[in-house]
Image 1 (cartoon, each protein chain N blue to C red):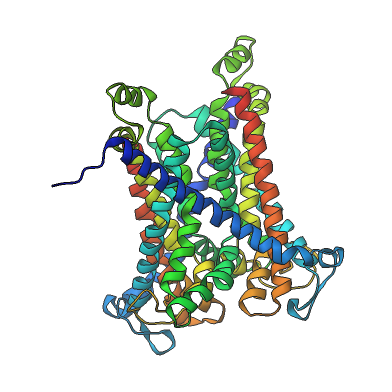
Image 2: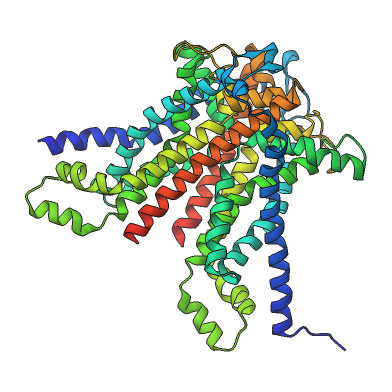
Length: 280
Length: 277
């Protein structure tokens, strides 16, 4: 005698199975954040955020790393945004399907898949060694700019494509040229969408370790220019944890890092949401 | 006139991504590939890694990377896919609108944080249950699998949502249950998107560095079980780059070249699959 499960029963079993796995997945992800916060929140004092680092991180605060992280990410964004938005404008407004378009898209897609350690290797040999920039914020910013470029290209391209055709036609009918239309009609309309990509790029830059450790270096001094070496928050956290320098400080640094990234991603999400609500 | 100049400038800018890709591959290959040819493939693909003494075998690292990647997929795909199916097909709009952004927000958590959680939470658990040090293929696979979740969930969810609802209506009208419809209509239609997502996840797992360094123990030998410590290609690069010189450094770039080729192949496959659908 064979035992058959009816379609209704199998649906119920499937439902329970999927529900369980979903709950597990969401639980794990929330657990990670909760665990870091639980152990790290007590470390978050004004002093921790505003003092210099002493004894390799065992004592003092994380001010140099906060400044270093902000500078590296800012540089990366300043460099990658014009390149990314420019590429997106070209892709969506100036080309039709064809080999050039395919090549550019292929470049963006593949660049997005390159692991961060390879960006680190490249930045180390090209910016740090061959161009003789040394370990500094500038080398790190350039390396991260390349890393976040595909994110900005893709989100900007989507944002520009989402601008209704009628907007452009009205501009043309009023005698606007192609460039005028892009600068005065298409881009301003697409800005929230473009900003989403930029903000997501900042998020990636802030949390990056493998690409910055070999380009920005690990100095704990407060950077005085973009040619100073610096240790980003993610690298500092990595060193604190891996070398067992100070667990409380490691939790504190991780908490700051996660709060930064959650805020950045939340802003990106809100921007995207508002943009989508307007055009879809 | 103004339009012509703008177009010229934009063409140049638009090539920045492909140019970056070219520069990255060029400089990594230029530093690493000559060494592979000089010492021969036999040396390069052996298991003997002593780069300061002329032995550049990366086979045990390749095996390490493979084991960790396969392990990560075994953890990440069932969890991620279930999550995506549940969210897309079995949950209400408000649930979807809360959980999906939460999962996507988590894509931004830095890999060092995942690695750290692995060290302080997961490794002790593995040590207590299975003995040994706990720094193992198993630990690295679980953490990497969790790291893949946001990618797998979000791409699979989008491809399930992209299946035209008329397909499902047709199946439901014929008397199939929701689950039968999902199995026989929705998933087959969303297949190419889901596979592309999995391949992209695979590329991410192979290339992941910081989390793996922290959890896998980094012992340089071919692991015999999932409880053994393991060293991947990426960890070798990150661990040894800062003090390497000469041929040793070239060997690390050779590792990078190998990794680059693998990742680009995976990307091309993923792009092909998405384009076809």
